Length: 296
Image (tube, rainbow, N blue to C red; front, side, top):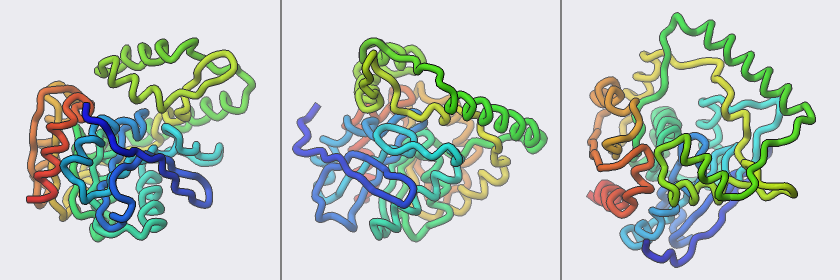
């Protein structure tokens, strides 16, 4: 991998939380931002393999990858708050307003792509282009599942909050290597890719290593959009959109191309060999595709 000249930690503080992240490129490029949004249970380090190639191929851009709330080094939400999908759209709005960003290029992987899609639909004036990585559309459910979704979500939340307030000891990993192997076991990540994510996602404690990630992120959502609602978000995206996806990536992508692809006004797709984290597997190829998309 190419050497990174300088990667900085960045911090954005709001009234109730702080968002941390990683950035590279000139700090003078305040109006030339590429904002990178990671997926569920990942963190900003998901984009570390791309940053050297961003610096080489897009030297006039400021690249910023944030940790979503509850992920990486960002703060967790308070016990009376929750990780609703729509609230991440509000977190993005706060970030944009704090920095007075206009016409940002967004790159979103997995859940990050879904949040970015909803944000772009609601705030089209703030997004110049949208690149989706192994992500298209939004998760939806059948209308008749609404009540069961609410019940399951409320019970999941109650169980999680009860556990948080109890004095049960945390489950710890004895070594970082143990945590990396655990992440590999539940994903398609290779060891070296999982290591990048886990190194940012671990907290050293007295008797071992715990996850920084807020355990409430695993709670069942109490609601889902209907397919028609999800499709309306996509219809309302007016900027150019490209999808880069892995040949062995998420099972949701291929049916998503059929369900959502025709609804975009400007849409292109590129398939690369790889899995769900294709951007970590082939960072140079992905950055070249983004460069071409942003400059064409």
